[in-house]
Length: 331
Image (cartoon, rainbow, N blue to C red; front, side, top):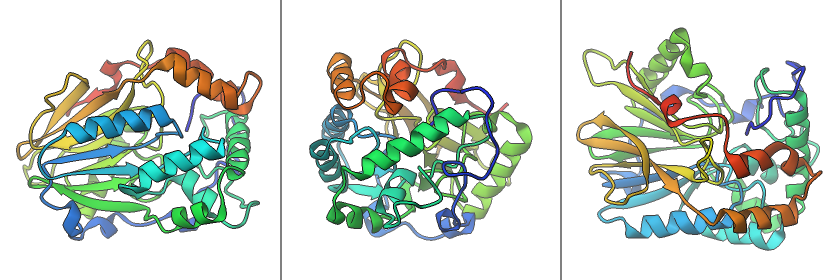
C-alpha cells in the first residue's frame, strides 16, 4: 500500500521493506488444475485492497449478487487495514470469509503470533517509497492488531497465498502480490513500464502455465499485456489497484476486476480488455457514499493519525493517476 512519497527513501532491509521467506512461492506452483469450484466459470470477481471499507464491501456484494451464470467472488488480500474498530473488523471479516479469500500481507501479519515480527506491515515497499510511509504503515498494522481476537487471527492464518481459477477456456492465477511472492511488486504499474521487466513477467506467465494473473498489492490499477508464446494471444496482468479507495484523480470509486465470458451489462465499467478465447476483463467501479466513508474513516483515523497522513488525500481526491495510464495493450 503506497500513497505518499516522502523524501529520502531508505533501501535498508527494515520492517515494512523486507519480504519474509515464508511469503514466497514459484511461478511453477500455478501449473496445476483449478479446484472444482473455480473451474468453468462464467464470471469471476477478484477484489483486492478492500482496506476495511464496509461500504465498499456492501457494494461489491450487491454487484456480485446481480451476476448470472456460474460465478465466484475471490477477495485477494488486504481486505483489512483501516478497520481498527473491532466491530467493523468483525463485519469485514464475516463478509469476506463467506466467499473465497486469499491472505495479503496485512492478514498474514495479523495472523502472526509474534507481534514483534521483523516484517512490520509486510508490505515489502520498494526504494521509491519514503521512510515516513513505511513507518506509518508499520504503526497502522500494530494498531490493527488490537481489533482482532484470537479466533479471527486463526481464521486468517488458514487462508492460502494464491489460487487458480478458469474462466471459459482461460487459465488464471490469482495472487495478492506477484508470481513469486505474496508481497511482490513485480506487477506494479511502475515496474511494468520497463520492457525488460515485461519480458521477465512473460517468462513468469509461461512457467505458471496461465493466461493472466489477477493481483492488487501495489495499490494502483493496470491491465498490462505481455506477448504470448508460439503465436498465441497476448497474456495479461490484471491489477485492480484498490477496491476500498479511489484509483484515479477526481474519481471516488474503488475498483474490482471482473473476468467473464460476456461483458458486464451494468454501467459501472471504467475500462476493459479482451483476453482471448471470448473472455473479457473489466475494471468495475465500486461507487459508495464518499462523505459517509470519509466520516467513518476520520472517526477512527482523525487528522494527525498515521492513516490520515498517508491516505486522506487519496480518499478525498484520488491519486495522480488516470484511466489512460492503466490500460496497456501490446506495443
